[in-house]
Image 1 (tube, rainbow, N blue to C red):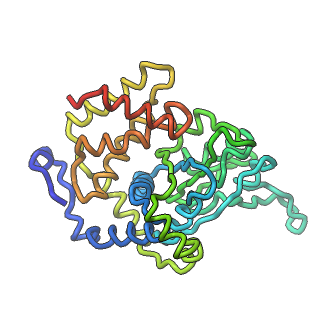
Image 2 (cartoon, one colour):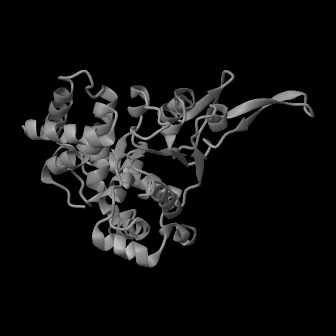
Image 3 (cartoon, rainbow, N blue to C red):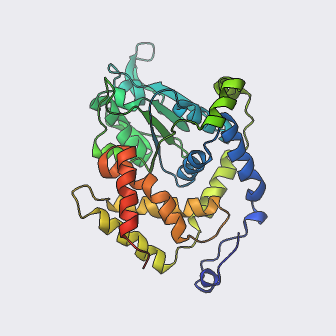
Length: 320
């Protein structure tokens, strides 16, 4: 990574990535493998990977059949992390997600049976098909990486990462996610329909989900942790912090402004995004590129309309 003189002078130098992990070869391979499964969606796969490196959670909103679940499966297989899928339905209970304490008659004692949340990557498929009570089962897990059942706390995987898919709210049987739940998703994206050329290639090649089982893991947990550590060292100059603060203040002119937690999340996401572009410092372009994905679902509760609002704010707020 190229280190700016200002960062070095301020003592924020980022360790040379090539001495630890050859990101210039590994990262393109990771993105290429993801794109081979989710064809023509490099922007979405890059944002999903930035979300993971920033230790956030990912919300994917779109109509059925465009590849939301496929992206989640491909991420788990490519990153070499254990993953579990939960289909959220109208009759889902919190215990179906976090686990339950049962009485073991053989030992004459109560025993905790972990739920599917005890994994590295949890795919919460069609999360807004479940009622609010079931949705709320993930609140503590997403924020504190632990769950509490019958007054006892149980730690989750250090790499715990939620990928939730949701259908548009105008479809039947959908329950809106509350603001507290939306704020726990670092990034909200849409997959969108493929362009004409990509769709033709997809039709000729067939369903790419059949290839996921054959994907080779390109990362391991230690590599992922090293990348995250390096992301945290990416330098942000005072003018960039001024720009971020100005955007946060602009959202608070209405009743749906971004919270301080969202501001901290924006900083982490900007660092991860710059890291993925092989830079040791954040540029204004990084802030502009990630802001709609971070702010959209928080501003209106919907990814598409919220991202439109976020882009309007970007037009109004000029880099100081």
